[in-house]
Length: 88
Image 1: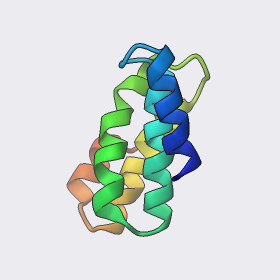
Image 2 (image 1 turned 120 degrees about the vertical axis):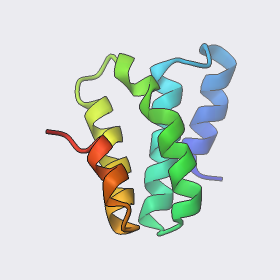
Image 3 (image 1 turned 180 degrees about the vertical axis):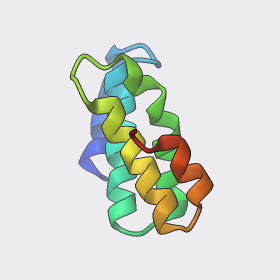
């Protein structure tokens, strides 16, 4: 099991489902699958996480999550979707 997946399971026991830490755990899993080029697994994890990162206590997490989605869409040739998540 991925460490991020294990962290997510632990956080689910102690945090509300919309907590930014859960979103970050999903985002890290998505990033791992992105790095492994398993785009079909990465995309739903990254999409599920991006909204929850907006309330993160750590600066830059939302931009990082959006950047990972943009990277995924650029790699897969979906440039219109990439535009939605690119930082300006």
